[in-house]
Image (tube, rainbow, N blue to C red):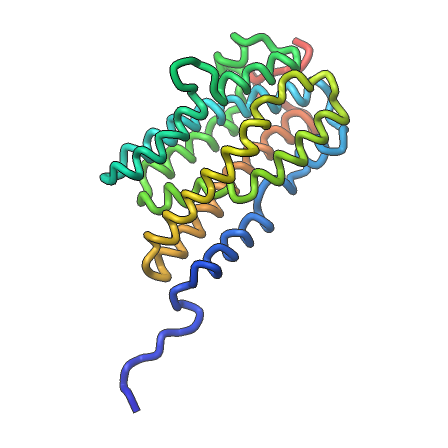
Amino acid sequence: MSSRAVEPAASRLLSVEELHARLREVGEQRYHHQHPFHLLMHEGKLTRGQLQAWVLNRYYYQSRIPIKDAIILSRSDDPNFRRAWRKRVLDHDGENSPEGGIERWIRLAEATGLPRDQVVGCKDVLPAVRYAVDAYIDLVKNRSLLEAVASSLTELFSRDLITLRMGALRRHYPWLSGGLDYFEARLDQAPADAQFAFQFVADHARTYAEQEKAINALREKCEILWAQLDALYYAYVQPGWPPPGAFRPGE
């Protein structure tokens, strides 16, 4: 009988299919599609002011996405990876023009009735939203490249949420219909981005411990997204207490 220790089943290297299933499980349990704020949105129960608060605060997150992606790009020694990841920055900043995801989000904000300068200035963003988004920047800056890439895999689930959200916004808030270009673009961009990122994680998580780090990074990203909505719900739904200096609907 061999004296070599048998690796516990719980810590064996996951197959590509098993890794994908574990990541999907994180999304089913923790992605923010289940957050009460989103449920109210999809049921048509948010006021114009509450939608404005969501769009304005979410802009801070949107504005940091290309910064996050530029950090990830800068951390790789592989020019093939950098060329592929560069697409994400251009998707949001625009290529040879500002017509990218950030500009489309501003148009969504304008469709709610918010002035562009107020949105872009980010002065009215909830402190908790700012802290959560900044925590995401810290994650991609200070963790391994594998974890930074894995944290982007919320895109595995985002297409379904975007499809649901677009239908709900058109049905319940028809005055927003002219500002939904951002979501239209993401229907194609997000799945392609997710496929590339997942393949990177599958190729570079070469031990069970590294696979667990990737899964945990995705879990933390889901928590960051959830925390932003927690702040919105507390400030603008129940109990409805926006902190000093934050956006106040109608003012």
